[in-house]
Length: 143
Image (cartoon, rainbow, N blue to C red; front, top):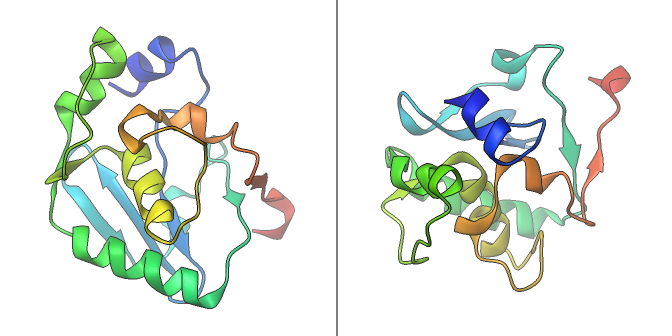
């Protein structure tokens, strides 16, 4: 599925997650187990993984963390992912399921941090995230 997402979105990325520096916790929605958290980012310690950062306050981080904690246990949104493959429209309704980049985009939006103007979370693919003007690539030498 990851390769299909990369091919259809014509991109380099097939996954997105949020790492919370304050708690050393990685939040993500993964195909096999939906929204979950891991005690650190080292589960993704892989040369094909890139990290991006964005400016935020401690208050915004707390809002984002609260949003992500409230999503834990929700299932993976397979229909949302199929939208990228089939190019069909989905309604951005209240979410009970999430795909990875949609979760990241919605979490940031919960703190009024918007990756893109006039774009709903369900429209954001993993590869599109890297194009956001508010993100900068985290130098791998600092990891």
